[in-house]
Amino acid sequence: MLLAVAAVFGCQPQTADKGQPNQVQDIGATTSAVDQDEALEESRLSAVQDYKNAPGKKDVSLSEAKSMAKPAAEMPVASSPAPVDGLEIDAVRMQNATSERAMRTRQAGMLGLNKELEESMPALNVKDPVAGEGEGPGKGGDKFAHVEVNPFRAVADEPLSTFSIDVDTASYSKIRSYLVDYNQLPPQGAVRVEELVNYFTYDYQGPTDQHPFAANVESAACPWNPDHRLVRIGIKGKEIDNAERPASNLVFLLDVSGSMNDARKLPLLKQGMKLLVDQLGENDKVAIVVYAGAAGMVLNSTNGDDKATIMEALDRLQAGGSTNGGQGIALAYQTAMENFIKGGVNRVILCTDGDFNVGVTSTSDLVTMAAEQAKSGVFLSVMGFGVGNHNDAMMEELSGKANGNYAFIDTIKEAKKVLVEQMSGTLTTIAKDVKIQIEFNPTKVAAYRLVGYENRILANQDFNDDKKDAGEIGAGHCVTAFYEIVPASAESPVAIAKVDDLKYQSTREATPAADSDELLTLKIRYKQPDEDESTLMSVGVKDSGHRFGEATGDFQFATGVAMFGMLLRGGEQDAKVNLDEITELVANNVGDDSYRAEFLKLVEAAKTLKK
Image (cartoon, rainbow, N blue to C red):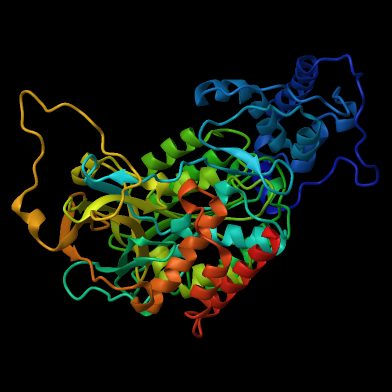
């Protein structure tokens, strides 16, 4: 059995007959999908049972195991099976609906027959309530979570705004792939404004005290609404050189299923991992776990300076089979725990297109599994690959709940940025469960809205709850957030809720602090990576009164990036933004930064597509 599993992951699955392509028998248009499934199931189960009962089964090779199964030509399946109409159902019912299909796929994976099975089986058109809809080019389309754009909120009703930080950058490179590789505007669901802004580095001041990061705040007039103010909150993590980086215990969890058989998936994945391996040293360790129809260990934990062995293991990988991501995650975390380095970096790096189709497949179930594994002290990095069946919603949710970060790798340059240039930030967490809470001064602010971070919003009481999960920040990372603020002297776009005076307690009244010239108070909570109790930072913020043109170049550039995201997602509050203004803001603040120069080209590409 072990040899069969290793063969599935270590080499390309063979066809039953290389000389003749598999012919699929048409059993007639009148045969129902259920009958087709039952016939297929009976034949497959028979083959699997024969395999299980074979003498000396532990030593049976893959080719011998496959010879026990009937060729695909003998399988009674339709040549053009009709899809089964699906309904919106909850995750539990979806798991039940797909369990039989998952079982057959998993069994076929052990026999190396996934491709034939996947092509012949009817698709189940069911919807994961978290995973979103398929959009964009390619088979099935990419899956994005649907979010509502943050509205303006009246300070009189909601004086607090609370959210988790986010260091993910996947949305930016995903949008780049749509604009450059596919010459089309991205789906609205692909656009997360905060990830566009956080793709870039800014000249923020780093920490000078005991805290692992420093807060930087700047304000100026809002360029798309001059009557409003724009406040930028920036966080800069402490820098850690690669030479000073703690010893790393890394587990590469690599998707080698059939859906990864694309030039921009597995081959690019292998190139990227090799770039990372080149940066490792004798104090680091790497293990490689792969998954397709089942999970398997390709390389036991190996010293980072044994690069030849690690590279050879990567070179052997080929794509084929269905995708049992849940089983791979469990094995990867188990491997990481077995090689745990106390005080070091312990991290699973998951590389996939997210097209999980057997085993645990719903986003909610995978997130629950990963969140439980995260309690072990092992962190997670998720690297997404490919366009066409890329499950962005699942990967963003997975990384967010598992002490992780999420990047999308569309080019070797992006792989170098994430895994080499920003290696310490990607691997080394300097603070976890980082939460931000803003209290607005009602005498200075009538209303506000947070630009982006829609899926990172927290309840106000979560800020002081150390059991509530939030985002992580890596060494040297910059995190930026913008608030559009309506001054108390301006007309508010949101009405204050009208309620009667309370009978048993007094209506909220302003305290003497409201008479100060502070615009807001910024509070940040965080935990050290190996601790469970949070630390509080707090600072009062005044409005500089600057015009937009007086703001720093970083402020202006980041504003232009945020405006680009606002325009692409098309929210109600974003209608005043236009590409010509963005071009002007960005062009004046590119400098010698190649990533900023590339962004200017993306703006021009979007301008052409919008004509």
